[in-house]
Image (tube, rainbow, N blue to C red; front, side, top):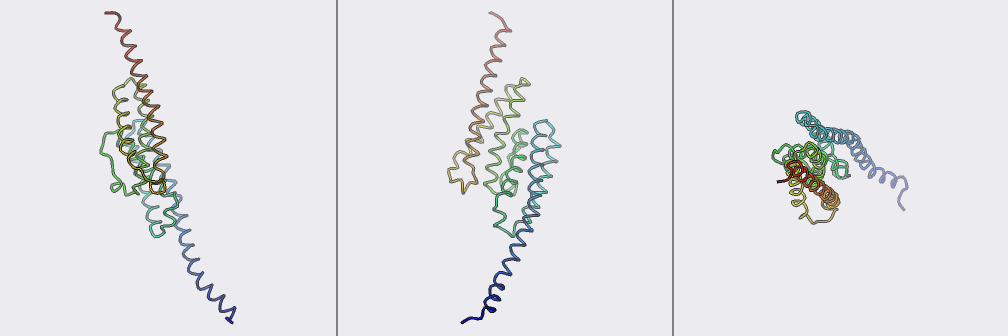
Length: 213
């Protein structure tokens, strides 16, 4: 019969390293969470600056988001279980959205996942949400009377949707991309209706102003 004291020592020897590993994982999580929250805040502010036509401020805020994101990524690198918990993915997605909104509206090249150093699934969700975010900028341009710009932005939204809709894999693999695309499709349909209505109203108004003949 085994010695109970020996069994306790055996269990303690096995559990001790586990406790240390869990403590290290928790410490990394506690450092990464505030950094991820900072990424999300700065990214949201960057997008709002883009809509306010403040590109320099938008870029500075996106840079701030990137610094916080790199901190979170570095801290979580040794702890894959914590890294995959979801909050880092959300931070990466928001950062991608900020960079992509600026690129799509500014007409600059679209940064890919390698350039942004993010997970490809976060990148896909980020550009899908960026396309939805274009609706706000598009409506602002329509209110300014810039119909051509509105139609151009609608085309960009269509391009993003068409590129991503071919990704037909389970949500467990794509990080929930299908739900994000469903939301983008709904935004596209509303936006297309807004653009069509505005164009028709503008044509009618111009025809009335021109008068008969």
